[in-house]
Length: 430
Ligand SMILES: [Zn+2]
Image (cartoon, rainbow, N blue to C red; front, side, top):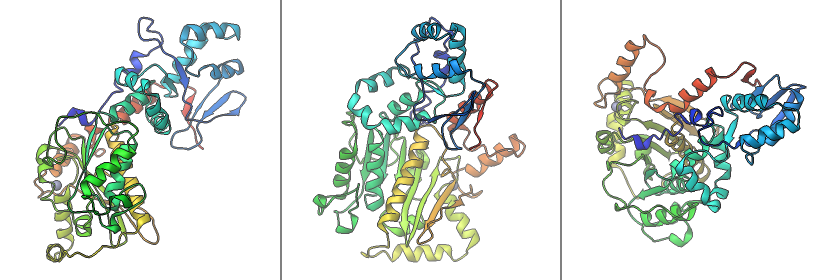
């Protein structure tokens, strides 16, 4: 396992920025601007609107409440204490409020996040473009400065997308646009008219090599120039150092029945990979395979054979019957699949555990309701995920699925932050 693919930049960050540590870095607290603020009553503040991320804080005195406006990231603690004194808020109340907000995950630090965040802060143009993404990350990182640290960490990531059709080229561009430092695209052949899609391959690229055209799209989407790197694009699939490989095949048989053989080098090197595509009016996102931990293409294939003895026979016919035909791939569906797959990829790359791990999400025209299809680890699959699951279950006495234990830094941090939450702070029921 390669630590670089699952950056955990948050560990200890809250401790570093503890306001009581006078010898530590100076914190410039800002109440997370991503959350809209409102008073539920005279002394209870609600931060945020949606159930997923809203919190309420109370009781808060009126004087303290107006003091919240001063927490806009322009002032360090000494100045805040001074201004607090002028507004009849004692210094220890200021410290307590900042501490309380920080522990509730409501506070960011405009100077925090470490050296990589500092470097990104210098690039104001890049940061302006990524402002909505940074605001979004601030909802997922409890520690002050953590959002910028994660955004900066994306710049060091290497992702490869295999397939440069309607889904693949757009997906790669979206990841690049979201700040992933290196997105490579592999494919064969030349750009056909039906490969074109808004945000993906353009009319100017018609007739060009697909991989080169998709790489151009990726460069156009990037908020910054890509970092220099020594290796040649398109080298071996199981190449170490890749944070994630995404299969986005143009061939709809490969979408419906992913070939375990294709992913073998990735299984060997322990490289996480994600499947996405459109097959006959059905969009597919997942599974995200964490080799040896969650169900893989081999598990999926064996499970389908268990359920339907005719499955292998059909797959053989489908694969041998590949023709030059153009598959049914609705543009809107392809766009939705590309976007959702990119979101799952990014959630994983940011250190989270998206629901595509061990699950294929499917959506079909015209109803468009997303359905999860679990990809269970198969006991006969050589990937070993089933053995691991069994061991975990016996170890935890049938407790929660532990296959994602390694990939859970953010959830764990949040739980810890929640446990440390002072009384009077709770998740809003809105
Ligand atoms: Zn497997």
